[in-house]
Structure formats: structure tokens, C-alpha cells
Length: 417
Figure 1 (cartoon, rainbow, N blue to C red):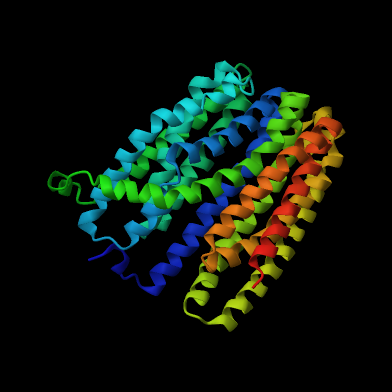
Figure 2: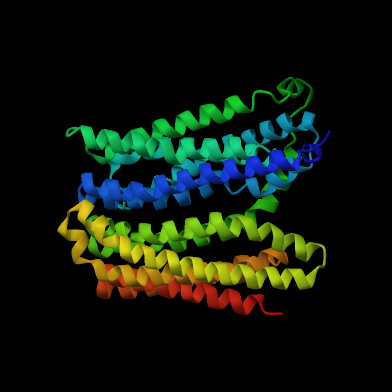
């Protein structure tokens, strides 16, 4: 029986969907609150370093894995159960080969002085364990175990946040970035261990009968490479504001900026979970079955919901920022409140850009998807250098909004018939 042939009753699917959504919501809430907790208990400079670590990890995970999952996900869905361990073994072999050069590239931000050498050990350990945990989580979801995958994600991104909060609340000596990173690493290791344990029921004995399929690995690399370029470009758009700000204004400025940028990230995460995860598969299915009337109707509905929900979330964020500033209690964050407005604008623009992105994705116009993101990143670099160099933190927020405005415009132009 193929992995895709497993039949699940509608009632079980409904319960799984509800459980999956609740676990994902708890994870998002934890991640969204993390930076505000750090802002209260850590110095502004340490919050800035944490922000740089997060965006650098985002880039590093793609470099480490080379987005090989873009190939393996489709392969696993249609595979016989006996072939699953073989494919996972061959994927692991591929990663063993890519890890050494990937980890060497990950040292570049430390050589450049963006990150301090004191964080190199925890950073490399986190990079490795986070990538492995993410891959195991993806495998669980692909094999039709979304609740298990969501629970692994919750351990990776939710449970450790509250452990860190308790440590920061109760310990004066442990209130530093190194402690937070160690707790994060512990959570990632726990999630990886759990994920691997959940995969024990696969027929791993089959590995004795199958050699490593180097041809399959080479084919996967060729398929995944274009997706890697798009992923790195989009991650670059999310990281360039902090990198340029660190260069021109220092890590304290990055700390203040990260505090407010966390609001944008939360808005995008909630719209992704609540709208994109629901609508995008339906849009793709409608196009693939040539039901163009339903395809256009779903796109219009998704677009309205994206704009309305992101606008409502932006208004809620604008209202919540004042009690959050009182909770943090540091003048450095309150003094730069005006940067919240271009950051909220960038959240609205980024949400709007998801509509043409979905059109290009559904219609399999991969070249346009890749080229638009790459071109926008190339344009965003000088814009950030110019505005951050001139206006500092406010320049970073403005340049970010301009970049997402350009991204949406270019994708809209590319998505037109």
C-alpha cells in the first residue's frame, strides 16, 4: 500500500484538523510572546543579538538542507511503505554530505563581525538540530500524521519558550542570551528525539536490502536547486533590515527594531496558519481540475480575507503595543514607537503579496516565482543601505515596507494572464 493510499474517516480527519490547529495556534502564541519576554529581562543589545541569530538561522537552515525537502516531499507521498525508510536514509546521506560545507558557510556572519564568536558553538548546534527537527516534522506531516508533526513543532517552538520565561523570571544570574540559547537547544533536541521516536514504526529492516540510490539523490538536487534560490531570496528580504541596521547603527538598534518587527512576523504567521494553509491547497486543486470559475472565486475570497484579517490584526497590534511597552518597561523601546507604523504597513503589504504568489504557485509558474523574489531582493539591498544609512531604525522599517510593496507589485505583474 502506498503512503497516499491510507484511508482516514471524515470524523477522524476533522478531529485531527482541530487538534492540529490548536497545537499550531499555541506554538504561534508562544513564538509571538517570546521576544516581548526577552525584551523585559534581557538588555536591548542581547535582544538585538537574538534577532540576528533568528534571521541568520533562517538563512542557514536553507543553506544546510539545500531545500531538498521540495523534492522528497512529493516522492514520499506516492511511495510504497517499504520504500519510505530507503528514501529517508538516502535523504540523510545527502544531508551528511551537505552539512560540512553548510556549517562552514554558517561561520561567515561571525567572521564578518555580525555575530560574536562567543555564540558560535550554540549557533552551530542550534542550526544542525533545528534543521534535523524541521525535516523530521515535515516527514511526519507528509506521511499523514499532521497532529504528531504539529506536536513536534510545539516542542520545537512552544514548550521551551515557557521554560525560558520561567528561568528568566526566577533567576537573576540566568538572565542572559546564552541561557536562552541553551534552553532553545534543549527544546530542539527534545523535539528531534520525539520525532525520531514517532518514526520507529516504519519498516527500517528494509534498509539491509537496498543500496544508496545516488541517481535519486542527484535527481533530487537538480529539482530542489531552483526552490533554494527562491527560499534564500525571500529569507534575505526578511533578514536584510537587521543586517544593514547592525552595520550602520549597532546591535542595540537591532534590538529595538526586532521588538517591533516581531509584531509583523506575528501577523504574517497568523494569516498563514488561518488563511493560506486553508485556501492555498483548495486554489491549487481547483486550477488542476480546470474548475476556473471556482479557482477565481477562491482567489477573490482568499484575497479579501487576507486584507481584512491582516488589517484587523494590525489594529489589534496597534492597541496592544502600549500595554506591551508598559510590561517591558524600557525607555529605548518607547522612544522608537513611530517605527511601528511602517512595520504594520509592511505586514499588510506582505499579506497582499501572498495573493499573486498563490496564483503563480497554483499555475506552476515556478520561473516567475523565483525570478520575482530574486529581483526584488537585488533591488532591496541598495534601498536598505540608503535608507538605513540615512534614517537608522526608521529607515529600516521604511525600507522593509518599500521592499514588500515592490514584491507585491512585481508578483502582481507576473501573475497577470
